[in-house]
Amino acid sequence: MAKLLLISGAVCLLVSQIYAAPLNEDERKKLSFGARFDPSEVQVVRYENDHNALDNYQFNFALSDDQTREEVGTLKDGKDQEGNNVRFYVVQGSYSFLGDDGQTHWVHYTADETGYHPRLGTGPDPEKKY
Image (cartoon, rainbow, N blue to C red; front, side):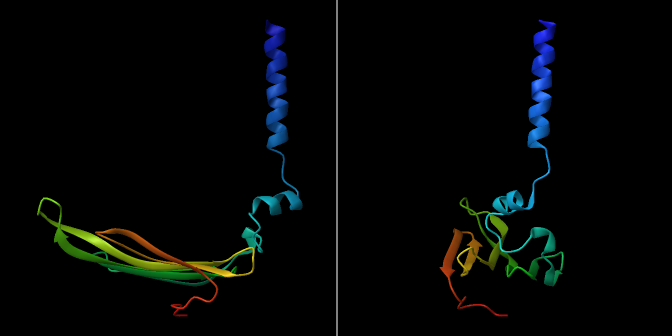
């Protein structure tokens, strides 16, 4: 029995070492989901963040691999289903990225008391501000 446990432990150790081995460049590219850029080489091109800690916030950023994101949150007063006064955020934002197909993919969204409302598209972003 002890011999079986020793052999089982050795096999488990060997298998864990094989799976923990460093990846070569081709294997890393397969795991990057087709990204055109090495994730370790992506740089922040722009970053802005404004949060007044009371009610509103906004931020945006752009990365060197053509990813962008922007979001604005505004605290609103309203009523819940029982008619009680509540405060909630209305959030509007967007993000975009360059896909494996060479096209820009974008999402614009609003999240408010009625739910999450995304609009998706491919190609030039008709609402892009920068």
